[in-house]
Image (tube, rainbow, N blue to C red; front, side, top):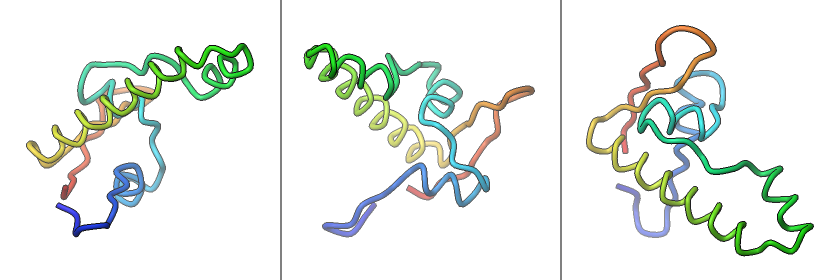
Length: 95
């Protein structure tokens, strides 16, 4: 657990262990079997179209996936990261 007022950047934690910064989608797909509903470019297009309702859903879903990933890592002490080929890479975490 983090000290009061401290933050925990899960992507930085995985970056330090892997040497690369994995995308959230690569981690949630491998670990949770879930996928992000969109990406930042899509959110930008929705903003230009005035579709703030879709941006709200997208952000809410990202927060839910991040929470679920954190809880998985805390419970299992690892997460998985998809690779271009082969089995996902297991990364130990200390959350």
